[in-house]
Image (tube, rainbow, N blue to C red; front, side):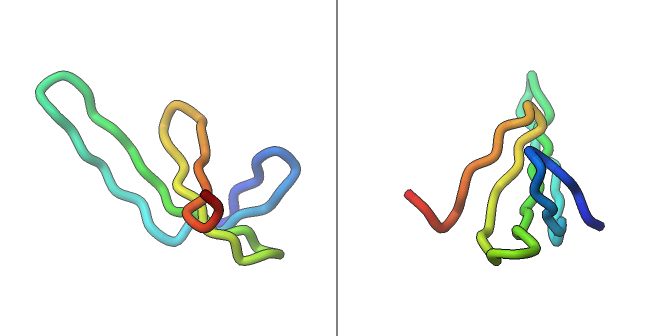
Length: 53
């Protein structure tokens, strides 16, 4: 599945759900189609690079 965010195309390759007693979280791992950079995408709309610190 291809996802577009901030003008960049990403390919989603893994999605999972996690929860505690109060909240369910959705995590997705995305890879930038053009640079290969790997990101974690959270359900609140934030993205964090797994390559750049």
